[in-house]
Image (cartoon, rainbow, N blue to C red):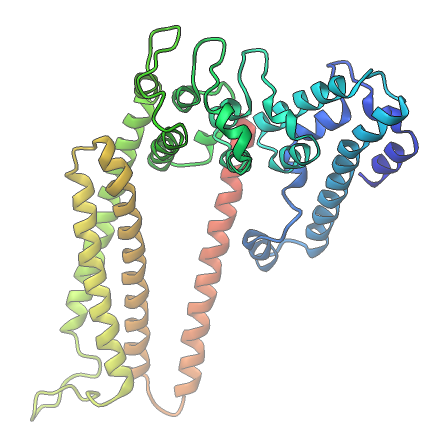
Length: 399
């Protein structure tokens, strides 16, 4: 990228040359949003390093992303100088902006928010551009579910009032775009059906709000309203979401029942036994025994609460409001509670083991159990991260 930036600075006219597919260098960058996604340090970046990724590779990715952004920004800014010097084939500013606006639409389709934001900063009028199907930037951003680009355009208050009213060549409003399925939609490879369907519902509501409900009853040239189009094109996704939610709730319920059963039994299994005279636990006044009781109670209550949430999901009628308000939320909260239950059961187990092995080697036992727990957590987390990477690679292979 540094070499490309040097060439672009020294031989500026090359930035306007098109390849065999009619693409300029800036358009090629606009179609590649992955080139800029390593510019900032994210939580995932930190976990990658902790889980064994080489620091050198990480730094190289960051440097390449910064170089790509510097090159893209330079080529966008060069538009103004080309207009002044006449060193390009464009005859006036309008011709240049038309070329840049096609780059804008390409960046919007690809989800390249950095390029979109920079072009709109340099050329605000480019936001009015439409593609060959009569769709403006809002149509395209909503069609491909690029919410960040939608947020960028929403901040441009005056153009926004005009853009929301535009219809494409088929009479589709921006609300119709929510229900249309993009031919190269990548979301289904990256998310569960339930969460994806829920996001579609929220997007439909949001677009309806920004258009002030003007298009809810509008028919396109095919005679379809936005709601009808949404229901038709999301019917299979809704079915998949229902099946996924039921399957997940059933599997989670089984684990929750087993966890609750173990916690219930543990409540009546006293570590160290009971005093033969009084009947009270021998370790009743020990801190670790009290920790065992508290952890076991939390484990049991969390497991029982998660079971109720999973049963609510299983008995739901699976209406649209249920998907928006409760189903995914119940499943996520239930899963978190199940995780809390299992974690507390682990704490109760460790407390019980330490109580029964207490002696001169107490601190050795504590260190051993704590280290085992820490190693287990790290291995589970790294395994989860590796699984996410595998899913991401598989998704790229399907594109």
